[in-house]
Image (cartoon, rainbow, N blue to C red):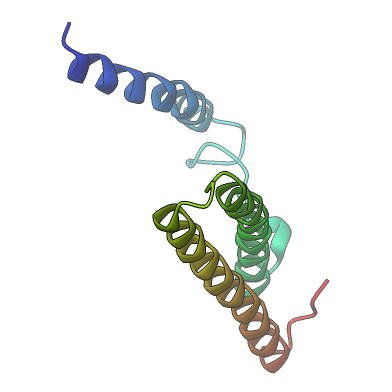
Length: 123
């Protein structure tokens, strides 16, 4: 096998292992009629609340990524060793990390304003 085929196999295998149970379990009857299971979105009550929950999860994930990037940027500064090109790369990474944090903060603010305007209770 070539390296390209091995990489493709290693990409397809985990994807199949993750998606296969969802397909198999979603196919069964479940006693709810023709679709094969209960509506997983019914716990949210409305589309706005579901969208808010998804947005909050994305913001939580973004916060984790931001934390990792801040640590990684600090690591890049420490290991730059006084080499100007490495310091410049670390500064560039810090700049984009700060921009990403600002976008994340702005997204949270926009979600809060829109949800309040629509009358959705934030938890």
